[in-house]
Length: 378
Image 1 (tube, one colour):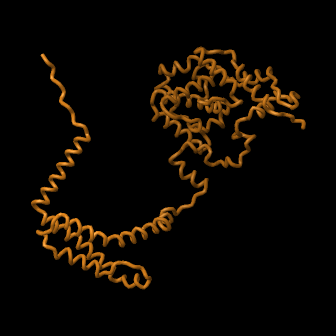
Image 2: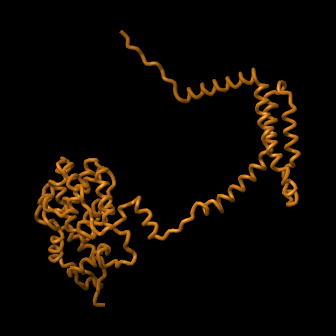
C-alpha cells in the first residue's frame, strides 16, 4: 500500500507573481468596462487640486515676479483645470489619460519644492529650539534621571570629580607600585644599569594571605549587606530577576537617607538558598570572598549584573567590592590579587582550600614591578 505523497507547496515568489498578475487583470477589466468613470474621478480630483493652487498663487504671484523668481502663472493652473474638465471622458484612451495626468502633475513641482524648503528651514533652525527648552547641569540631570536609574543613588549627592584619586573611601584601585609601597614590600635595586623595583616576596605572601578575609562558615554570622548580596545573586541564578532587581533598587534608594535598607533579604534567601545551583557554586570554596565571587558568576548566567549596580558596597566593604568587580576580568586589581588567585585554584580543583594559594599573585606582582624603573631616593 503506497503512502500518500505530500502536495508541492508554492514558493512565496510564485504566490506574489500570481497575486500581482491577478491584480493587473482586475485593473485592466475595470478600465475596459468603466474607464469613463475612472477618468472622470481622477480628472475631477486633480481639478480641485489645481483650483487650490490657483487660489494660493494668485495673490502672491506679483511678489515673486518682483523678486525675479520664475514660477508658473495662476492662469497656467486655471488652463490645466479647464483642459481636464472639458474632456470627453468616454473617448480618453489610456495613453491620453496617462499623458494628461503627467502634464497636470508637473504643476505641483514648484509648490512642493517650496513647501519642502520652508519645512526644512523650520526643522533645522526652529524646531529643535522649541523642543529643547531645559538646560541641565550634571547634578540636575542626575537628580532627574535617578527616578529611572535608582542605582546611581549612592553617589547622587557626592561630587566624585573633586574626590582624591589616591586617598579616601572613593580612591581608585592601587597600581602595583602604589600597592607595594603602601605595604612596604618594595625596594630599589640597581640592575642592568637602572634602578628597578624589587619585591619582597616573603612579605608579599603575608600581605596577600591577609587579603583572604574570613573563612566561609555559612550565612548566619554574616552582616546584613553580605546576606543581601547573596540573596540577590541566588535570585538571579534562579531566574528571579524581578526579586533581585527589587532588592537592589530598594537598597540603592535607601542610600539617600544615609541608612541602607536590607529588608526583604530573608524572604529572598528562603526562596532560593536551597537551590542545587547555589550549592554547586558555594561547595568548592573555603573563604567568603571566593564564595561571593562564584555566586556573582552564577548570577550572571541570567544576564548582566555589573558591580556598579551595588556601588554602595564600596563604602561598606572595599575589598569585597573589588573582588566582585574583578569577576570576569583577565587580570585582578592588586588589592584583591590574593583571593582572586585562590579563587581560580579552588574553581579548578573543585574543592575548598583553607591554605591561601597566593603564589601566582605574588609572581604576577613581582613581574609587574620588575618592569618599573624605581628610584624613590632620586
